[in-house]
Length: 108
Image (tube, rainbow, N blue to C red; front, side, top):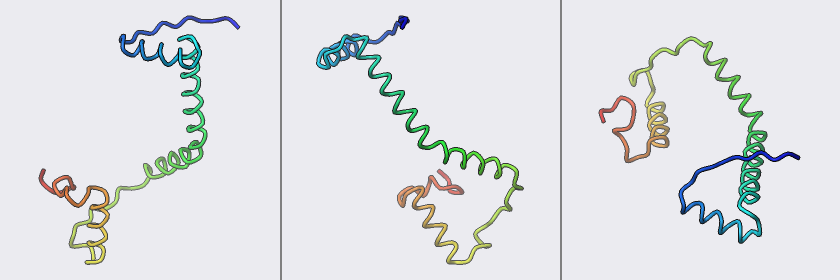
C-alpha cells in the first residue's frame, strides 16, 4: 500500500512525550501516532454507531416540534400549588438550589 506523508506541528514537550510513549510501546513515532489515531477513530465510529438510532429519533422529534404552533405563555397564577412545587423542584434540579439568580425571570 502506498504511504502518504502528513506533517504535524507540536510543541517540544508534546513531541518528547510522544517519543517516550512510542519507545515504551516498541514503536517508531509514526507507527505510534497512526495507532493512536486509528484507535481514536474506531472509538468515535463505535460511539456514533451506538447512538445513530437515538440521534435519528431526536432529529425526527425536533423536526416534528418545529412544525408545532408555539405554546401559550403560562404565568404562575395559571398553575396549581402542586404544579408550582413541581416546577420549583425541576428548576432546582436544573440550576441547583444555590443559584436562584441563574433562573429565568430572576435578575442576575
